[in-house]
Image 1 (cartoon, rainbow, N blue to C red):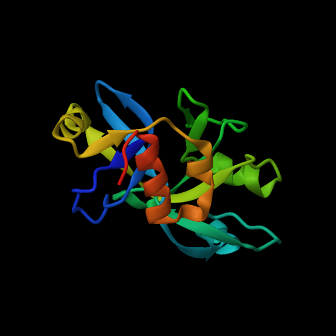
Image 2 (cartoon, rainbow, N blue to C red):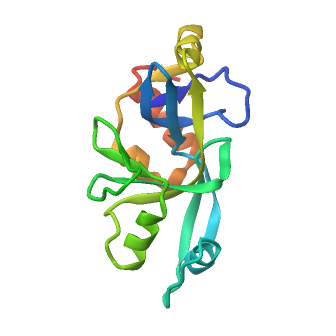
Length: 168
């Protein structure tokens, strides 16, 4: 996980905890895991995607990052995989294809999941520069922080900051 350094002023990343999905020579992709932005209707989201269900319930919506912020990605446990699923080395996955929505509707949802609007991305070498500059700290991935605490921005950030080996 990436933990924003206290000095970051950019509102997109202030107190952000980013679960890094992929990082290679071409760049990096991650999802901000501690930015709950609201609650929405699952059936309305399905209607926007051309799908329907007889059941309706409220779902928590999270800001995953400033890129493609109108697109829904699902951050989830690794008990689901489909075309387009990216699974990290610690077994947490991200799916941006409609296949996960169809699986949820048919009762085959992953055990843990979060609906994310947008993602965070870095060009080749950009994240390395930001890490060297001290903008980000590294902490081991923690499913309890990623899927627990209901996206409480500052509390998740505090716990991730401690996990990075630092004290406030």
